[in-house]
Amino acid sequence: MPGTLEPYHSGESKVQPRTRSLSRREDLPVLYDRLLKLKEMFTSKFGSLPKFYVRAPGRVNIIGEHIDYCGYSVLPMAVEQDILIAVEPVKTHTLHLANTNPLYLDFSTSANNIQIDKTKPLWHNYFLCGFKGIQEHFGLSKLTGMNCLVDGTIPPSSGLSSSSALVCCAGLVTLTVLGMNLSKVELAEICAKSERYIGTEGGGMDQSISFLAEEGTAKLIEFNPLRATDVKLPSGAAFVIANSCVEMNKAATSHFNIRVMECRLAAKLLAKYKNLQWDRILRLQEVQTKLGVSLEEMLLVIEDALHSEPYSPEEICRYLGISLEDLRTQILSPNTQDVLIFKLYQRAKHVYSEAARVLQFKKICEEAPDNMIQLLGELMNQSHMSCRDMYECSCPELDQLVDTCRKFGAQGSRLTGAGWGGCTVSIVPADKLPSFLANVHEAYYQRSDGSLAPNKQSLFATKPGGGALVFLEA
Ligand code: GLA
Image 1 (tube, rainbow, N blue to C red):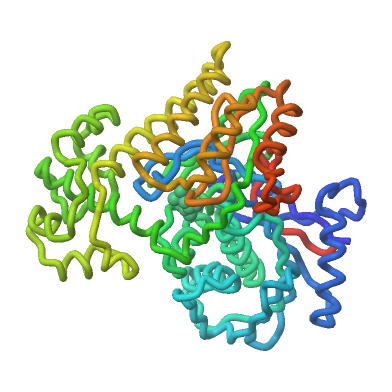
Image 2 (spheres, helix red, strand yellow):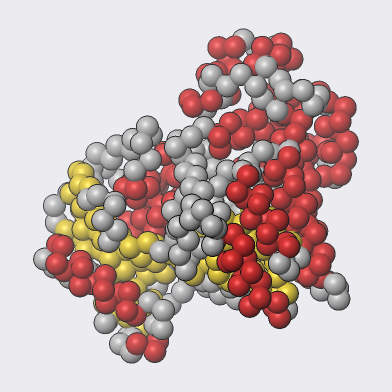
C-alpha cells in the first residue's frame, strides 16, 4: 500500500517530502480504499503500477468573493473533496491522461508540444495548464512522459474549485516527476498563472488554499506578496455547503472575465479621476494603496468619481482618452471585446465593501465576542446581498437556497466561488445542525417536481482540511 510523504509545513519551505512507511488502513482512514481502487484501475488501464500519488483539495470560500483578482485578501478553507492522481513516469515523451469518471475521455499528447484549447474547457486542459506551468517555470523544452489516472470527488462546476484542484494536482505531479523543488507559495503562484491558459482571468485564491491549507484552520490569503494566516473559526459553528444544482463552468462563458474587466476599467477610471498614472493600474487595490486611504474612504471616492448608469465602451474611451482599438487590444481580454455595457460603479462598490467585510470577519474571529456567530453570519448575509445586487453573480436558485438556509437556522448564508450557480456556504450554530440539514434537505432538494438530482454531496457540513500532498509507494 502507498506510504505517505510528510505534509510540507511552512509556506516558505522548499517542497522536500520525506517518505514514511505506512501500510495500515488506520493511518489513511479516508484515502486508503480510494488509493487501493485507483491502483487497481491504473494497473488494468496501463498494465503497470503507479509510482506515486498526488492529492490536491477543493475549497470553500467563506467570505471575500470576486476580490482576489482585485488584489484583496480572501478567507477560504480547504474541503475534504479533492483530486487524486496516480502517476507513473514513462521513458517516451508521451503524456497519457485517463479519468476514473467515464464521462471524461482519455487524452494523449506529446509532452513537448502542449496545446491548450481555450475554446473548449475539456477536463484534460486543466491538467495541461499545471503541466505547462511547471515546464515553463523551469524553462524545460523536453519533458518526460507519464501515465496518469485522475480521480475527482469535487462536484464539477459547483464553485468548490474542482478545476483549480486539478491544475494544482497536475503542477505537483509534474514537479514530482521532475524531482524539482519549489515552495508551496511558488507552486500556488505558478498554478494561478498557468490556469489562465484556459482563458479565465482568475485570481490566486483557489490555488493558494489548495497548497497552503492546513487541517483545522481557515486561512486569510493575502496577495502581493502571497501569504496565508490562520483564522480560527468559532467552535460552536458548523459551516454547511449546499449545492444549488445549477452548474456553472466559468471557462465556458464570458461572465467571469467580464467582471474582471469591469474591475480593471473601474480601477483605471478611479485612478484617472484622482490624477494617478492610470495606464499602469490594473487592480482596484492599487488605487487604494496609491491614494493611501481606507476602504471606507474608497467607497466615498466611488460616489464622486463613477456614475451608477452603465458605461459604454465609447464613454470609457472618451474618459481615458484612448481609441476603441486601444481598449480592445490593450485592456480587454479576448472574450470581452464585444461587451457593450460595463457597470463600473456597482462592481467597485462590491469589491471595496467585500474587502472590508473580510477584514471584519477575521477581526471577529480573533476577538471572539459572545455573539460572534451572529456577527459573522451578518457579514456573510451582506456579502451575498452585495454579490447578488452589486456584482450580479448570483442566480434565482442560489438566492432561493440562501433564503431556505436562513429560514432553517443559518445565521448567515451566501453563494461561494464564482457564482451564477454552484454552492452556498452557511454558518449554523452547531446544536442546530441536524434539524438544519433535515429541513433544508426537505425544502430545497425534495421538490415535488423532481427537477433536482441531489446526492450526498449536495448538502453537508465541512471542516477545514489539509493542503496538497504526495504519497509514495512504500
Ligand atoms: C473563481 C476564481 C477565483 C475567485 C473566485 C471568486 O473561483 O478562480 O480566483 O475569483 O472565482 O471569488
